Amino acid sequence: MKKILVVSGHTNLQHDSFANKIILSRMEEIMPEAEYVYLDSEYPSWKFDVEREQNRLRSADVIVMQFPFFWYGVPSLMHKWMEEVFVHGFSHGSKGKALVGKKLVVSFTSGAPEEMYQAGGIQGYPVDDFLIPLKQFAKACGMIWEGYVYSGGLSYASRHDDEKLRQMKEKALLHAERVAEKVKSL
Image (cartoon, rainbow, N blue to C red; front, side, top):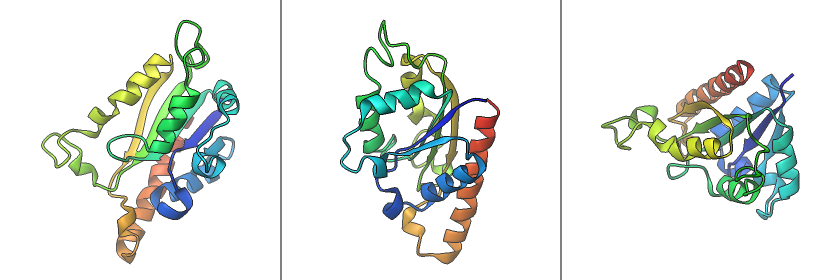
């Protein structure tokens, strides 16, 4: 059985998230065998136990990075985790082979609707174009890029509108199901 590691990179999941909290909760229900790491609650001071994190990555077959799309990329907490944990000699470089062959799935949400992320849309580019740094990250680490699951229109700002809240909850639950399907297919 493959070992699945899900890493939540939301900077304040319990207090500033609607969709990511629902997605992760549902993923825990449908993929209880996975290991879940909540960077914000496990490392509130943002001081990572690098050895522990590297061991988690070493033991995983599939790595899922779950996060909200902040300023066209991963949140600052997840970025710092990447900078400190994925170091030369561990994840890349002539001796950094610990992650070779591991599968990477990126799962993320945005407040902006999906249609804004297309050529000619308000964001100017398709969402796939914003993922080039993550694709290169996987390549540099020798991981297999298995693609992404993305849902837009999940704005925390809409949490006070009952109808939008209901629609966003449905969308977040469906997102979790899509992630689980993707991971189970690997």
